[in-house]
Image (cartoon, rainbow, N blue to C red; front, side, top):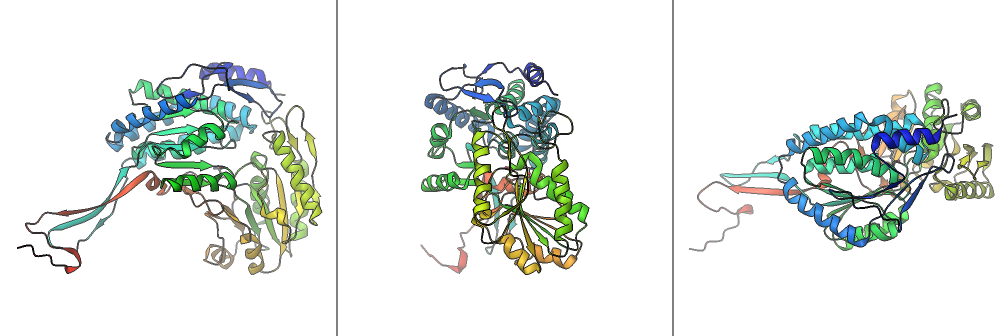
Length: 513
Ligand code: UN1
């Protein structure tokens, strides 16, 4: 049985964390203040890991002024130089990967390999961003006028705000902050109040690089409640972009407030991800993909598989094999070897789990496996649950952040696709099939309506190189890889006349002599 206290103490020592930690950084750590400090409690067994102080409105304002000033210098630093700094950050994260991974595991309740995987995501994004720093390309167009040049260039946007969720307490910050940093932006981060310690741990590592390399304070950290610091951020005109990961409800409000001041938003809201399992699938691959998608991170990923639609010809066989996997999957302390499913984040998550299951039963769902709370006193453990569902069950339209998988049956691809798309959210999707026609149908305009479409792999576990985000109620944002960097910059269309006359576009004449 893993010794939580020892693991915590060792990781704390390596990372310079203590029982009481400042949760506010803006080039310097603001002194710890007991008032309004957040307790970081491990969902594994209720251990108090440490306490993290929060930002006062004054600390917040000061931090914004500091990153505004840093922007003046950073935005004109050559992008490849910025990239070199971010590469060094990745290296430092690599050195501390095991310790940081442990903090994420302790605070979010992730199994060790997932805690470390989260840090790996940050490392990967850093290297990706560093390469990107030499590729912030604009396009060259051709001018309709003689001796004219027409092109677009990308210019840094300004200070930006990042509000992240508990389930990926550090990786999602890095998708935004490290990409934004190579584009020349500075950023301020309000982590989830359930991810405060992981945020401090990461910032400790990063602050060291920033200070050693004499970089201006490009990253600020302001721990605090959404209702206090989050509110200040969204209405702050000095923040040109607000990147938010969290619930649809909060996201809609943020969208209204930020667009009210004509700011930009990048929203990564709910997912209700579905996998179609065709009779033409490799069944073992489908079982592994579905099990990982539904069980990893105890169903608390935005990309978790929440629904499967299985072809009626293989339905019984697939379900009986899936139930066997559920029966043998070990639930418990995520720091112990062999455990694949750890705790939910808190008691509230347990209540949501119970409520969803009760609603599903009331609406005609049939429990195929699970459905029970295992512990809610010292640690928040539940049984992963499989529920046979029908299309008219409204509960299946909602995202419940818990390991509940709704199971549907289909006969035709048309039916499967309808069930798949008929929910408000549109983040991740998958089909398991070895049939090219089914695969292409899934990828066609009549296919998956999600931001992420996977063939023969899980809805969860996206790589950082692709753009991450989704459609419909998921909010439309794209972050991390591909050309998501463009959102952190403003596009400027440049027309340059190197002739001796001023010919006008569209053949307009305007003779002033
Ligand atoms: C999230 O849950 O907000 O694709 C992020 C995945 C991870 C990231 C999830 N790479 O499952």
